[in-house]
Length: 192
Image (cartoon, rainbow, N blue to C red; front, side, top):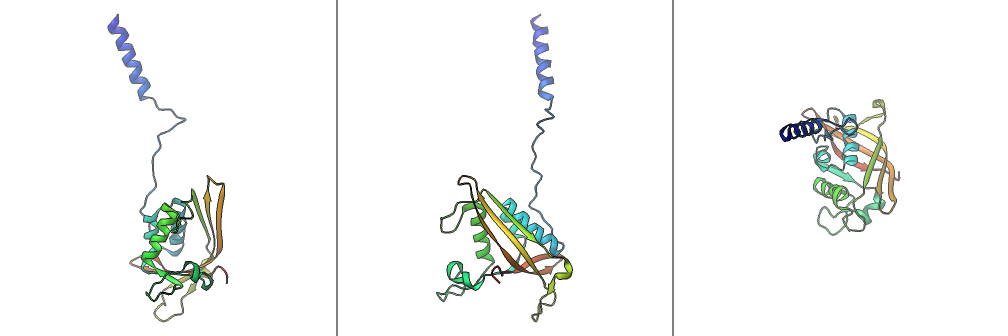
């Protein structure tokens, strides 16, 4: 009798242990840090994805090795970086500074410690139709595509029930190398 009871309990445990609750399926992470930038539009969609996922590894795959961020002149004195070592803040910064600033936004909060990491980051780009894209007229840039996009960037902080919103125009200078597109220059034209 004890053996039959034990076997019944054992069988019941095996049956119950093998059942899956259809209302609570197993959670699987299907996201991937592997992206393709096979065209300019896909590149800009991946930019939105990197911000929304706060994924610095995706973000790095979007930027050209000679990347440059260009500020509007009115922001140079407050957030510019001294790139040439002359003690004066410049209106641009390069790849290493961009990665560090973006990593701070995604993982650490503001560089000066005044803002914590946002709980949610949402970047929305209004990518114009391809017929509104431009070719960069500068010498040596004949194959660069220039896409001006209206953007909305929202950083949301749940604990303080607040958000920071930035919007305006960003002009992306994109280049293709070995079948992939990269951001070569990101020019902030928000107040123009």
